[in-house]
Image (tube, rainbow, N blue to C red; front, side, top):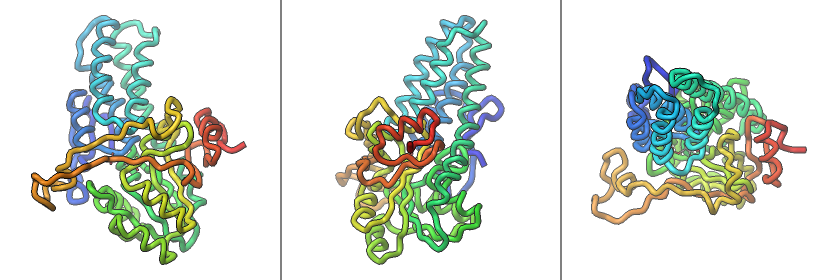
Length: 349
Ligand code: MRU
């Protein structure tokens, strides 16, 4: 199953808003439609929106019938701005768009059609590479899960949040494929319930043992000795190792420290943003209050009530036991280990 693909000259996405009730696909034929699908969370999850935006750029190049490379590039610049504005926190989106723009800016194309073909080829490569990267992270991280363990997981980080396989849930999947027997507690992840709607849907299909828990129950299970490991994903990681991830991650990290439970983040190196010295600089998306008051249209409180809805929080690096990347597991001091991971080297000396 691929969350994101190129199909009949369109971008094909699983409509994640309809899961777990219905598995259905949408085919998008313009970069504007792709940007809207990202904002509306038809597709969500940092690596998945990166790959989607890459295909969105390939689509943008086909929407414009400019004959000259210069005209095509100025159209692409506008499309890039539109796609990057769709969601601000996950750096994979900007990373993928910038990757295609720098390809467009290289002077190796004879004509505009050559550039169009190269952009599609690069988007396809980004999508394929995401799956290979996730499998490598799965291989590095699987050893963290031991027979009989219980793992706490927050949000959704599986195949749906990536192109396939997943990041933190990918580690869980890799360990399951190795035959390790363990149990997963899934934070339901308010307000959009990625844990109970998406992660549980994935674990059902994989046959992994799980229970959905209210976000507010994580401390209870830790205090009762029922959690041995915490695995989460990331939307952006600053140079010092601070991790922006789905809202609620920070409180899980603090609880894990209080209860002496290892807390690992699993993310590809495309999620690392060395331009930002610390997590304080990461832009945090503020989403509509209707997601809190009436998630998926189900009224929990009157629509005129006041509410706030930050979509992400930042976990300071001191709470992390390590960051599982495709190059290996990076540990403190993260300034150096993350740089090595980004260079494709083993993170620890
Ligand atoms: O708002 P979302 O659902 O797009 O959130 C992104 C995420 O899926 C999580 O924050 C995840 O832990 C990191 S991406 C694998």
